[in-house]
Length: 381
Image (cartoon, rainbow, N blue to C red; front, side, top):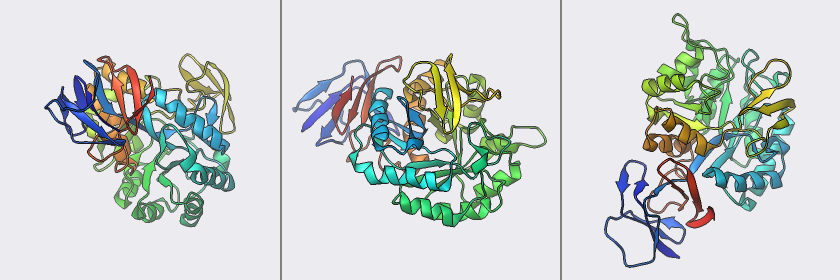
């Protein structure tokens, strides 16, 4: 199957093109061209074409949780993500027992070729190498020091699919673990941590390249002790995850980070839990009861802690533009190319390039999602 997409604007990664034509040949992108072709044209008029979004930090959707270790649930999430503009994702675990984590990753890796919908490009491990002060909705009874051998056991069960792991830099052995695991091609992120600036910096120098949901679950910025937040804001060579639902991070703080780090070093994520695309009510995250109301998910244990989000990635893109902290091009890049590249899957997704899978979305001028395509085939809208 071969056709050409015509639209008002194309977000092609390194540049934006107005008008023109983008070939789709047997499910792959061809090379963008200005001149009108002679073949079949799918005309989207004054709409915009962007890469499919990539959610690299998401726990659940449609009342399913990655931790359920249920292949049908993962498949349902993959299909549901298409209406969020997401065409690739990393199922994200929670802190749990070593055996449960092994079961989860084995379920995903055993069935990865069976999933329809948004493509599972790998697995993101959030925990269990965290510390208690900024535990959030992670269960501290499973917290432990990093273990290369344990990680290798998980990675073996995952058949090499773990692409990213988040740890607390102050745990014993964190620097050594970071150096070893990052040398194996796994992205090490830093989060849920009360680390000092120097502890975070030591892990970055050892190979850590990301900060997990920046500002949330980490020691704050003080003018004498920059903490984890200061490290995320000031260290070079790292990408900062950011949850832009307007509740996890104040929009003016988002603006500060954008001005400090620039959009090239920020990846939009959702941290969405199972109540995404679901009504308000009572849910479970991991082993904890959660109340979802007024756009937030919070633990019901009296702490009032945020328990992930119900954010959809398409809405995060729209939010940062509506807050006047990013242009449409920057917002889309943060939720596609930056997200994919930072998680080590940018060679598979997040970019419109010749020869890549034709996974893309169609947007109006207000960044509302109209259609989602996988491999050149319309799958939503």
